[in-house]
Image 1 (tube, rainbow, N blue to C red):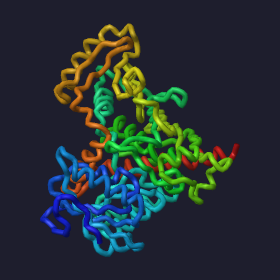
Image 2 (tube, helix red, strand yellow; image 1 turned 45 degrees about the horizontal axis):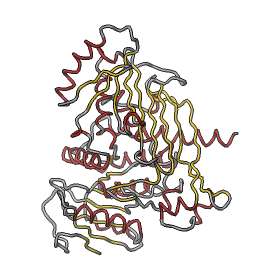
Image 3 (cartoon, rainbow, N blue to C red; image 1 turned 60 degrees about the vertical axis):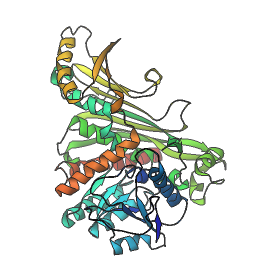
Image 4 (tube, rainbow, N blue to C red; image 1 turned 135 degrees about the vertical axis):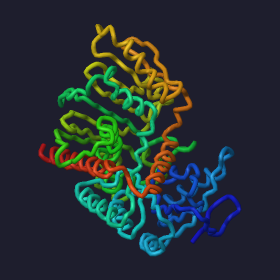
Length: 450
């Protein structure tokens, strides 16, 4: 056991907090972002079970940076176990009651199942399942959670992004949006597109990714990874607090996948590894190009509404840019569009665009609706632009992606205190992972048939 902290406390000193975090094999930086702030009622001791190595070192370094920052430093005390039986030891000791999982996805679904079986709650990074076999095990995991009276929840940060929240808000104001269109496969009612980058900055420094992140059998393909957020937002925005049953409410239409080529030098820049590990050789062409299946597109119908999600992974964003998001919800009276391109300085901005330019009463109805919206979101206002209106958001709402992890964790802690998740959350998580894993199955079959 190794104690790691920076506030002078080097030994385990339990307090009376209701919640104690356990971190399991933190191979992804999201595990650290859960601890970017302190939470009332959560013990400052965190028990970490993981194999020794660079993944763990990076995680502890990240926590250390939070503990030593000048503004609002945290005071987490990381107590670490690194022997090969780390998972079994975690189950045996049960030092905490909330296990945070964000790392290699190859074993994640199995870890989730066994942790719940041991009577411990799980807060997991997406994806919780990366293939159809994992999906079947995840369904059983939710059954075990119900039997053991523990909560399994995934970290859906994008629900806390202000433009996404406002897009949802306006989509349920009939006088502005009208009704959600049904759409077609070629012109879906809802489209969400996400562009990500392997080379990026996190918590003020260039992110070092583990080599296994580039292995789709361990990380999962793009079509089952980032798309988890996009599918979740469609369910959450279009059918808020409604139970969605994947056996009745989902119709898969089409899916496809394609690779991002990564050179050995690019791989080395991000992983600090000078060679491709043996487990990646299956994806290497000409000894120097790694084909990573990080890209995917899913077309499907949700409660009769045509939706499309797509994810693209590039190596590095152009200077001054970053990950981007595009989203459109098409209504009978207006379209709600989030853009994040050059014109928006690569920051997400929501636009409200009437379907008909001849709709003379639209401006007055929008102004009336804004009274309700601005009462709920103080300071939000509108600016007239060429095709409609731009929704202006005070900078205080733009807290950033990293902060959303704390917001999700706060929500999860509320559910823990209540002893249950909202009735719609579990069936909708199951539906979400059905869509992503079924899409991978469809895309793989389609590719093999060509």
